[in-house]
Length: 371
Figure 1: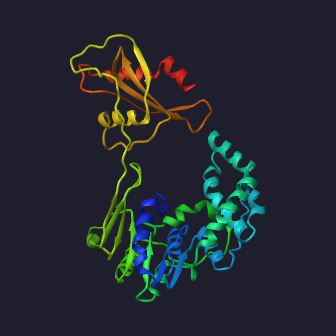
Figure 2 (figure 1 turned 90 degrees about the vertical axis):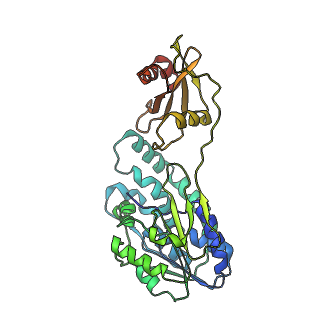
Figure 3 (figure 1 turned 45 degrees about the vertical axis):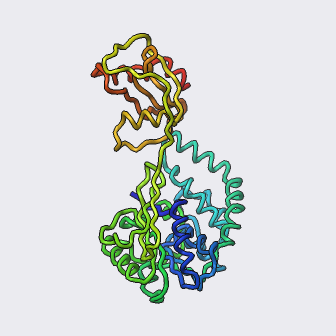
């Protein structure tokens, strides 16, 4: 499992609230990632200094740019990436290329028709996308103010920070998290990589102990740490399919909890009762996402993470609801449809009602809807 470590909107809000009280202080940000924390600090202003750190090519390119320098990148001999040779001029060109690469590289080397089409589309539109990306990121980067960028080991970065400095970080949770995340970057690009020791579990724990020993810190992790209960100031879950993130700090004047909520809407269709007989032909009625969410919440396991569906259908026998179907577009071939779920209502007198709902999914009527 790769580690991404991006801060969602709720995490950014909590970070902003806490950081205001640290104005006038030195701030150290190990594992800066995409510089979201530095963006927050720059928008607040008034800090004595802001020090950034990371080892990835993407972050190093941005960090050096913010400090008035450049990271020099060349494309490897791998034939899958030769078309990028003209797009790694130092500075904004390289940064825009690396940013777009995070979207394009998952398609490289894949043989499925979907990924081949996506890669072809990206390559055809590359000049247009590259120019738009440069235009978008330049004003954002110009607003970020940092005093130092250290391309090197995060452990050493924090160890050498002044004792009264504030540490703010959302580091990799998994051993070798960065290495897995940027594997294709390593296949595509050569650059002067900084020396560092990967975060093994033991080294990561030492890093956390060193950070949490400070007077002031803000550490985010996507695992709950019982020993840190006294420092827990926020729990954030942005969607029902995402893992919760736990935020720890000595500042406990406020605590924060955000959790996802589904939009639910009533379904104005009578349901087949426990002792009622099935009557009449099967029919299909479109459902809104809110109506489908309500039925799914009632009849599916709470352990199944919900997702939105493009096509949602109620299955009726006569005028009575007996189940529901949901479909989305297939990802790998034209004309393909993906059935996300099918379920029947309960309780009823029919032990195999779900088979009737599945039969409806195979009908000509459903096929016509999906076409």
